[in-house]
Image 1 (cartoon, rainbow, N blue to C red):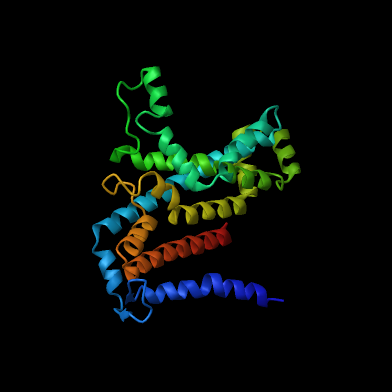
Image 2: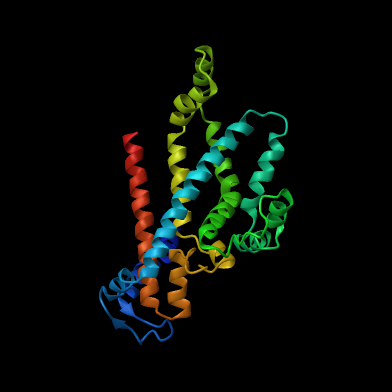
Length: 277
């Protein structure tokens, strides 16, 4: 009974991770399986001495932290709103969840045009008189990462909303009624009754957001390819460049191992925190 699941786990998760770990300890171009030279930890020393790697790591951690914060706040807030069942919330739920159904490549291409110097956003800003000249959201270092963060939040806020909305259905209604009878206002009810009752849901959603942020690739690659001047470079785009542009599979695999280690650390931290709460 367990064999099919075990086979899938070994074939699609465990074995590939072990292979990537072994490749990270070698020099390999990715073509001839016989042409492999074992280097030990040399690839890890290489990325540790590469300034671009550290910039990609900083961008990845910043992106992950901010998107996790914004996605949880917006997703939870909208879930609370639609749980009131006020007229129009059904339409709001559909509108916010729709972007989560779109392929990330399509989202990146679409927002690349929207944020273009002559795109919709710049036209609105100039029409309102906010900006006299076009704002290069994807061409200036100070804007580009924030633009990608905004696009990611726009796309996946609906996903978090659905998870939180499902979690709200499990909150004990008697506790809400007791809080109302005690005269608790909405903020007090949210922070002292609803969130503590959903703490395990919050942990799961946050962990999903963190893992998704650590491996972000498609939107960044489509919109900026890590530019300008590496200001939107993330670990996955750096890994792609090393592996498929320069054919340095050992270094690319070392970066992949770093991503996996960060995800494992986040998972362990989440489960330990869940046990204490």
